[in-house]
Length: 84
Image 1 (cartoon, rainbow, N blue to C red):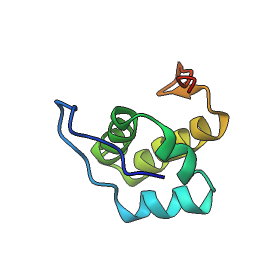
Image 2: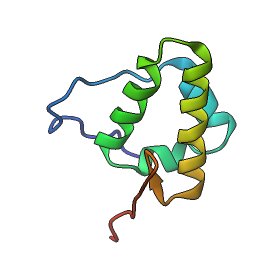
Image 3: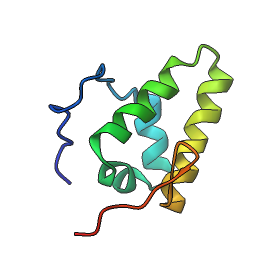
Image 4: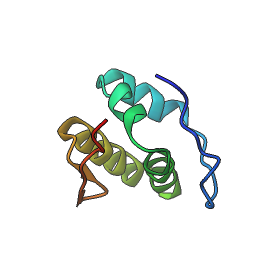
């Protein structure tokens, strides 16, 4: 899967921490994550890493995993991928 194009984003770009990458791979949702638009990928990482408490980071990470597995949510909002 090609790397996301973050060039159009006006917000800060967030690097994926190793613990997030490991969890995505462990749950088999890396492809689902990479198929999301660049802004969603970036927003998820920023949202997770902004949490101060490890427990909150874990809760947010698990919400992202659940949403990627379902495929129809983004940050608790309905989301439908664009049809190709």
